[in-house]
Image 1 (cartoon, rainbow, N blue to C red):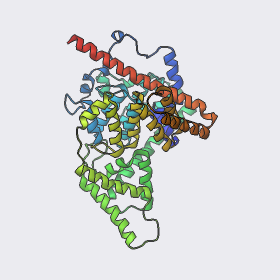
Image 2 (cartoon, rainbow, N blue to C red):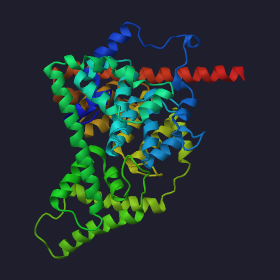
Image 3 (cartoon, rainbow, N blue to C red):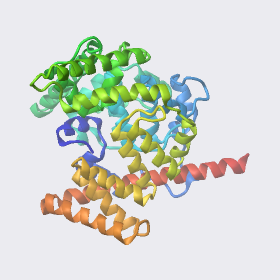
Image 4 (tube, rainbow, N blue to C red):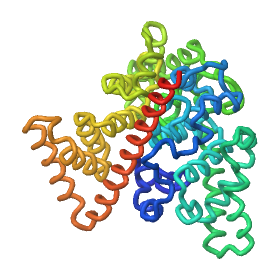
Length: 454
């Protein structure tokens, strides 16, 4: 559900809302054939390896044997890379107490990419496609799939998952790798472009990391400000400030977040701005978005000193269980960076969407308005339409009128040529909603079955 210029990157990541047009036919074909669909009789279903709480234990990435999903997520807020890896796994499958939500998985996968955890990102990219039983080479392109498989093999986590009995990278990639010698020129071009894109992103991230740390001791030039602003549009302000506050090698060591380092960055940038104002320098001295970033640095510093986290663990646990007020609170914390949550608008929006998928009509319309605000018109139309069609009793007449007004406006802007795209996107989101509801049903039935046997 991100900007069009990032569509190619999201194709590599596989399965977000933007890809509804690309994978919808594959999903529909499997569903019409009855492949991969949940059975009505839970007793007839063989348990999957990831449905056991022991799976995460087998990865040896837990902080302690009994670590819960909420505790893992709290570690991920500190950007511990292995914790973020487990969060992505949890949201892909609904494992270890995480709800199944492919969008939350992709949002956290983006954080891994920003943390320079490149091989693991591509391991999870391949895994995400396999988790939905797609014909991945067809959905993503054989050249792209081959590149992702090669990059994924560099991740030690591949053997870890195979030994846990969950995911065999060799099996998933075998067909594509076997066919590589007979690739067409188009496939070869896609393969080369994918590797070039990965290398470019890696260099850009490393450059921003070095720059944010350098700027703890000097002011940024206008060119450097523009470079950082471009990065924040891609990954968030909070991620850039995380680099300013750390010295560790991303993806290799545990975060060494330091308030002292962040304060040094804040002072270096704001002192320069104040000095230029006092000297009445008649030229642009700071881009507006970079100025906002420096203000956010001060806010992060203040929140770290004064913010009471409350019972974040209980809040996350309840949100994962589907409690609507808790989900709304989690969305608010991601929007504001409070209670030791990272400040990440995309995660906040996806939690609103998660509430909408669980029959929270107000959240559905709120997300529609938020999507419209950031020019994601198809997403806005989708959720406004779902709101009117599926949650007619969740709002008063005025709100329903507002939703219809939003729909009419989007249709007027996009025109009839986008009609098929909107309908496919809507079908895709309803399919994801159904899968989440089925995941919830199956877990409830297992809990009832377990309680009866105890």
